[in-house]
Image 1 (cartoon, rainbow, N blue to C red):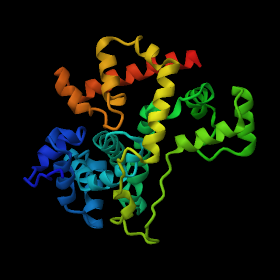
Image 2: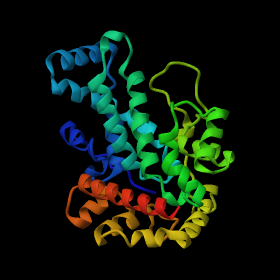
Image 3: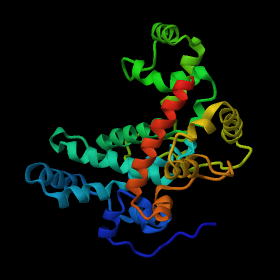
Length: 299
C-alpha cells in the first residue's frame, strides 16, 4: 500500500505545485495537502473575488484557487477510466480552475464552486480528447477518420440528431452506427452511482473514488486487443516519423512495454531529460500531432 505523506506542505510550495502536482514528489502528499486547506465562506469568497477584479490583487486570486483545489482533485478522479495519469488530469483541471477564477463575477450571486466546475471539466475533457490513447479509438479506418474529423463537423455541443448523424456518415462515407459510437466514446460523460439530489458543493459521489486496475477489467482487455490491432496496421510506421526524444516520450507515456502498467508521468520524463514538465508536454503535443497526421493519411 502506498504510504501517504503527512508532512505539512507550505502554501507557497502548494501554489508552485498547482501547475505540476507531482512537483511535491508524491501525488498523495499533494492530495492530502489540498484537502487540508480551509473552505472559504461565502463572504470570504466574495471579498477575495472583488479584490481580484477591482484591484488586480493576485494574492486574492491565489487564495481563491488554493481553496478550490480539492474540487479539481475530485473531478479529475472521475476521468481515471481513460488511462491518463491522475497528476496530469489534476494539472489540466487546475488550469481550468485558474481560468474560472479569472472570469468569476461575484456580483452574479453564484458561488465559485458552481462556476468553476464547468471550466475544470471543460479543460480536462479537452485534454482527454486530445491525448486519449489512440490504441483505444483508432482501431479501424472508419474510427480513425471519425476521431480526427467528428468534433470539427459538429455544429453544437449537443448530442447529434439523427439528421446530423446521417449527414456526417454520408460525408465521411462511414456507417451511421460508427458515428454514434464514436460520439459516445469522445463525449467522456460520467454518471455518479451514489449521488445525492441536493446542492451540497462539498459532496461528491463515492463511485468517483473507485477504480479497477485488474488485467481482466473489460477496458484493459479491449485496450490490449486494440493495441495489437493498431500496431499491425500502421502505428509502428508512424512512430518512425518522430525524432528519438519525441518517440521515447510517446512510447513511455502511452505505449509502455507492459500494457498493464501506467505510462510515465510528465514529471518522470522531465527528470529523465533534465527539462521542465511543461517542456515535455510541448514535445508530446507536437509528436501527437505528427502521429495523428500520419495515421490520418494512412486512413
